[in-house]
Length: 484
Image 1 (tube, rainbow, N blue to C red):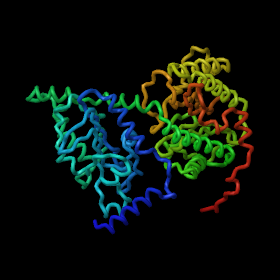
Image 2 (image 1 turned 30 degrees about the vertical axis):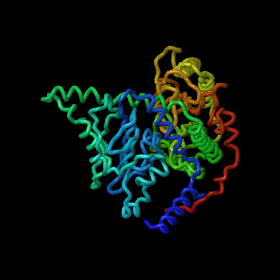
Image 3 (image 1 turned 45 degrees about the horizontal axis):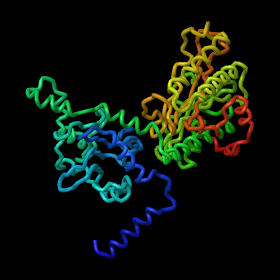
Image 4 (image 1 turned 60 degrees about the vertical axis):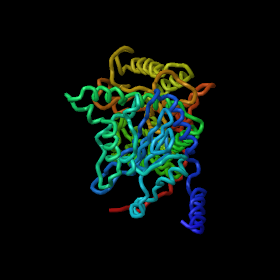
């Protein structure tokens, strides 16, 4: 490249980096580097941790699902492309004349492929944009002169069987295959090996369990940079719930209600939904992870349970509201709703530093059992029932069910509180309760000053919901032509 070309190249790269039409609030390369340093401190002596990018998954025929990076891989690198490998070493290594304690293998630049699927970072892009000093193309991994036998521990997570082989000789399938060969992974899975010494030594070095715990410890407490993105994801989701309350009418379909939420996500710049949207009307609300959302008419007297979360720059919210389609709770619906709300409020109060993370769930169970007994739905507080079949609390972050150790609440954890009562048709109680499915879910930040409800923008009490549903909606005048 001559000097003139270099100046042009530098100008274009700088222009792209400062493009005002692209999001400017992604996690920084300094964040990812600091997270790798935090992991390195946790690693055992003379060890290496190995991470692989997520697999590309097929939707149908020659169409793939929109690619989504493995959360751990993104957390440590910021790299969003497939077919990549990261190694984090406990100590400095000297390999192929270079000294380093981490190395990244990425997709190679390919002009033809990029014409179809977009620009790749390549080696230089990963160095400049992600802050890695040592980066290779994935195809270089086969000849990479690393002796895994010298490490006391080789840490990685167990492989899944959902990786497809393609014509690319440096795809994820080949990266995994080469890695297995380099560490003799397949050798230890074969029973009755002739060489017991090699078998025992290799098996002792390989650790497919510890890395999961290390990453859970890192990810369960959020940094300030993470909290900015997570808070925005939650607030976007809460606004979606509020706007849906204003737009709701009984003739709406479940799919249309889902679309209102997801339109708002996109309007705010959220790239994805954090998980398949759950929008269940009537008895469908009693199905915990109902995702068909295919009921064409919600119905005048039905409740609709809406469990959705925007994913903003990788971080996902998890917010649930249950509202009456016609804007007014029936007597039975309100009794059950207010009971769930009471359990949630009591549980949130226990989201304090040092409290066992199982405590809110125990509080909610006690309140709900007493309430169900008082209403005659169960025979006594100690009676067995299936009306509250799940726990109340899980971490959120890069995953909707973010990894964690689930010991005690710590400052800057973000944890859901989601009690629910579900009384499906045919339940052993008075028919007047049938088809009532209610869940209220909020995302709670643990602070020194007590719990902070990040999803407070979504009305939560039965009275506030009914009031919100009387407000005008910007979608009232959004009328499309009828189609045959």
